[in-house]
Image 1 (cartoon, rainbow, N blue to C red):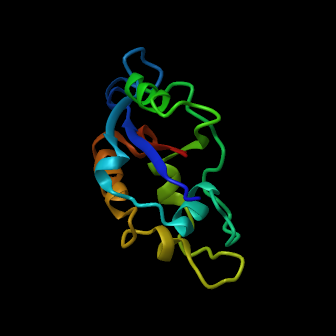
Image 2 (cartoon, rainbow, N blue to C red):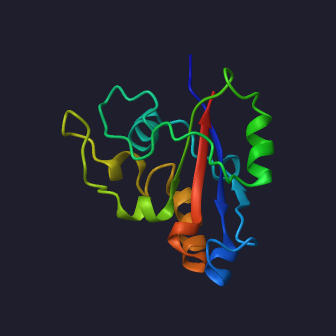
Length: 150
């Protein structure tokens, strides 16, 4: 049985303008991952989110759940997949965390790096491009990707 990924990039534009604690600094759904065609390369899912991690990567963002401050658009989209038990592994990661990650870190065998399985040249490259652009506009801590699996 295959594992499919779904999710959305969110940003919080008000945080840069008014500060993260301002009542208008809420998260907004920016783009559905469906439009960015990430595919379901298991190596990438393993090193990023700990899904099907038979390679032994240290996942960057495993099992964090749905953010408590998720945008209405994201909550609606996620609910459309039926929620638990139809979905699992829901998690999220900010652009700041991705930018700070060690992309040369390898799996347990020492043969695959994060950059080789989930870097800019992988199916996740379009996601990183969108997040990078939004980060330039709104700040790295105010851009995140939220994913779930089914």
